[in-house]
Length: 291
Image (cartoon, rainbow, N blue to C red):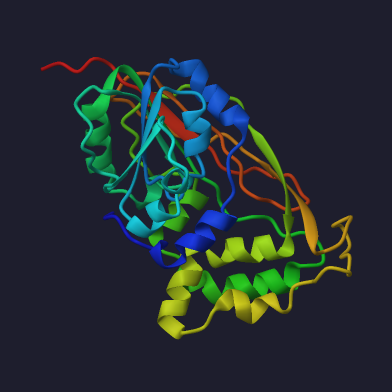
């Protein structure tokens, strides 16, 4: 699958509304990768994972094929000596051979040309290096909002690109060239306003593609039907303008080999009210390459 640009036109919304990741995820990575490691973060978007990586490792080289996405990256606005930014595709980087201790991919692996990406990981990872990838599927709907959310989802369903189905399938179809390292499931709880949730939906690739195809903003069209502050739907336990969101991460059952030992890192997805299985990722330890 070639790199596709679904987010440049909504880069500001993406930066403001996409969820971050729990400290426990980065702490897990830090148990497998030394603190002096250099990190390559391809498909970094606007930096939802960069901050957690930079807090634990010596340097993060964060890359994205979209100049608009990198323009919204927090490190572009507030430069950090531990972070460098570059417009690069996920399958290629200017980093030197064997220079990276960790390749970290947050909610982006499904957009990459996987054979080319895995080959680039093999090139840049030093012996004993780690590849970690994670993502999150769609959220679960709290009681009282089902009708509006179902109608919205039905309208954009045909506009999801292939990559989305790969996330929903927990990357199970990937031919992973790595062994697996088992990791615990992780959980995230978020407290979002309804406006934040609607902004998050506006950053969906399906919404972007639907607007391009039909000229209709599906979030604006359906958002007016969603419960507003002041009316508390059954099961939400508070004003509908704010919803406690809980997500869980279930382990993905897929393994592979090529780079040596591997690991999976579990990550959260925003899921209002009801805890449920969510996303996970995989990571792989690289063996010394023979030349």
